[in-house]
Length: 131
Image (cartoon, one colour):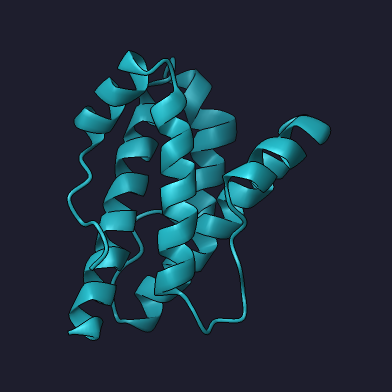
């Protein structure tokens, strides 16, 4: 059974307390969960080590590509199972490059909450299908 009870404010608090280290754990957990849930779609989401190394080498360009591919993979899974995607590539990019800084970072928090909600949703569908 995959975890379906991640909450934004708890995550936000853990990230502050651990000085961002919990965020790295989430990257690992989201990649692992997404690979489990979307197994068979012919794609693979790389884990934390590749995320960090290629992010450093490419000046975080890889991190943006990784995030977009993860969001698209999840949205495709939700659509395949007749559920509405919570975060789409368009909304992710709009928040990342326009709304985030225009709202002084508030939309980054909203997007973070929606991403956590989306991971919980795909994990819930997977858990129901696995029963």
